[in-house]
Amino acid sequence: MTLPSGVVTFFFTDVVGSSTKWEMAGDAMERAMRRHDAIIEKAIASQAGEVVKKTGDGFMAVFANPTGAVSAAVESQRALGAEAWDEAIADFAVRMGIHTGSGQVEKGDYLGSAPNKAARIEAAGHGGQILVSAATRELVDEAADLLGFRDLGDHYLRGLRRPERLYQVTGDGLMEDFPPIRTESKPDRPSIAVLPFETLGDPERGAFADGLVEDLITGLSRCRDLFVIARNSTFVYKDSPVDITTVAAKLGVRYVLEGSVRWSGDRARITAQLIDGSTGGHLWAEKYDRDVEDVFGVTDEITDDIVAQLSGYHGVLVLTEKKRTVAQDPGSLGDYEAYMRGLELKHRFMPETNVEARQTLLEVLEHRPAFARAHVALAWTWLFEVLWGWTETPEVSLAEAWQVAKRAAELDDLDAEVHWLLGELHMAQGEYERTEAEYRRAIDLNPSLADVRANWASTANRLGLAEEGVESMELGMKLNPNHPVWYAWFHGSSLYGAHRYEEAVRALEAAAVHTVVSRLYLAAALHRLGKDDEARLPLAAARDEVPEISIAMLEQIEAYHDPAGQAHLSEPLRSLGLPES
Image (cartoon, rainbow, N blue to C red; front, side):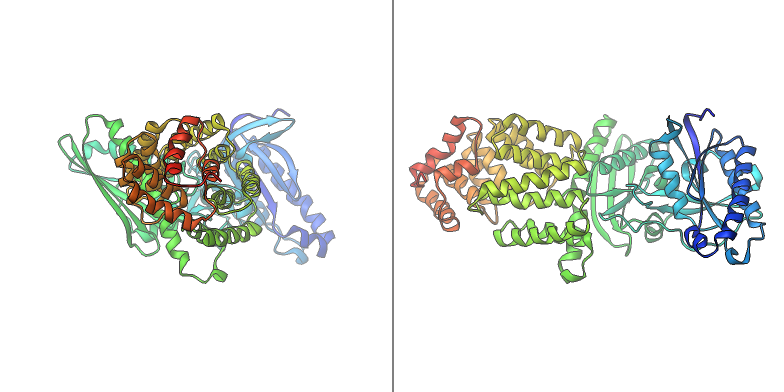
């Protein structure tokens, strides 16, 4: 037998409840399975399919023609439904799943995601039901056997990251009514669908809006903290009036992004708004007026801005999720909600809430050990202790951070935030080349992640790239206009490193709260401006916060690659009276 390769259609079957039936009525099952096998093998052969293997009490078969696979399933179900099974197993029934995708043959079997997806589709069904994927549905001739396809919407299949649009095959001799299919609940992160933007003023220019939406879906999909519905599931709503809450329910998402492009000559007004799919309430909106001479430049700019405002730890979606969880009783939270509470506690940037965040995240990981983002957040709680002098044993905290971060990388090496974290850990160990490489990898993975741009400002400064750091921070603040307070700390430190002391003072004084390090940068900048009396105030506040702070401790916490850069920070503080050790 030579199995077909390339794009093929996979057909999986399974007898529902077979284990119980074998236990309770073994003889009847033996007779039934002989008849079952004969029916399905005949149907597969009649449509030029190949049986790949038996899977317990089911089949895995492959077809070069997707219509053949569906026809074989229909023929099988009709014949099985016409059988008079023994009374002990009168409810004998078979569920079937079909998917079309790339098949890689190795040692008489198939590898890759397509057969796995077909098996997951089969497992979602009920006895007597035939489920097919959107990929198969698009390729099947509806005239074959006078078939119909009932759209069941998007569903999250076990073990798969993205939802799959599923269809139920209907027709004469097939069962019609089934309970809801057996799929996973909504993903454990904010889920969003980007609907086609409406084109106003010049309907002939709809391609611009379509391209912008595709870029937004691609950009948001790069953010590991979001679950983004695929384009083929949202573009079915193009040029159709929709009710947002109905669409959200059908697509299985919590949030919907919609918008429009209004043309006036070569000038366009692009509007975008984020809507709560459960209530229809508006959560965020933005408007862009642009002359569209450079189409790609405009779409790139707008895409980057929208993605940055919606995604990331401090984006609209995550902040909205945080608000949902903060007021809840911790004991009532699910794993994802508890993770969001951990983030909220971590981002208060205080020693006591950092410990509380760690405990919350550890509890999440007890239930969800493969939750990569929770590992990232947990590692930061250990690293914060090192960076801000909150521990008397920094080597222990750093070791804990490394252990957790390595696990996060094993779970998701394509997450920009994993590489951001690794960059900071390498920096804490004085591994400067690895630091820069990890940061650049993070930026490549998600150029719109404002927090990475902002943190790179501080790190680039300590690597001797202060001006690049300032530019990176300015881009970060543009991408995240409502940025958190730590942007001000790192903006100030990078400006200080670039010898732009007045700007550094303004940036640091704008911070509503401070860490010991940000206070020391402010003191150093004021000293450089000849304002020693003013400089002693943040220095005193730093020593009140961490009484043991010294030049030696600072140089460990805020280590520079270049000794001259280190001295540039230490010398003014030494002049102001900060002790050596």
